[in-house]
Image (tube, rainbow, N blue to C red; front, side, top):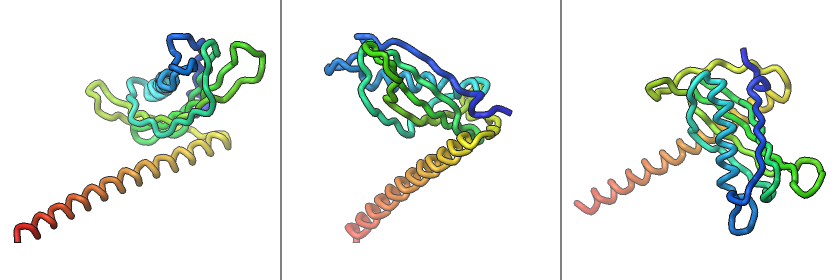
Length: 175
């Protein structure tokens, strides 16, 4: 079986002027693309084939990335269900103009679904959790999943209640 540590991938790239926003720092959308790309590599490898982004559960931008900085994105699988997976991504930079420790600039959690040739969800193998950190990440991913599902259920219930209220009001107007 595969452990979360076995899925770890790191990519590095230099941030260029073409990726800058009006403030002269790297546009957040470029960071989001880098995060989705590396998370996709992890999910596709683990699924043994195509996996599609289902949700960007959370992304936190901590400090700006500057043009010239060397961006390091590291990702690994945190959780696997029947066909869905959560990938955690940590983004750090080496500043181009100083020789200091890496700076943590962003973190994200993405959900992917493994799909077959017809685009239908396909099963993924279970994760083999070995270390305390892997177990912690798995538990935290389960919490995020429960929150996503509860939020979706609450939104659906709210819409159904609104629809019922509208139908009741229409019925009263007919009387």
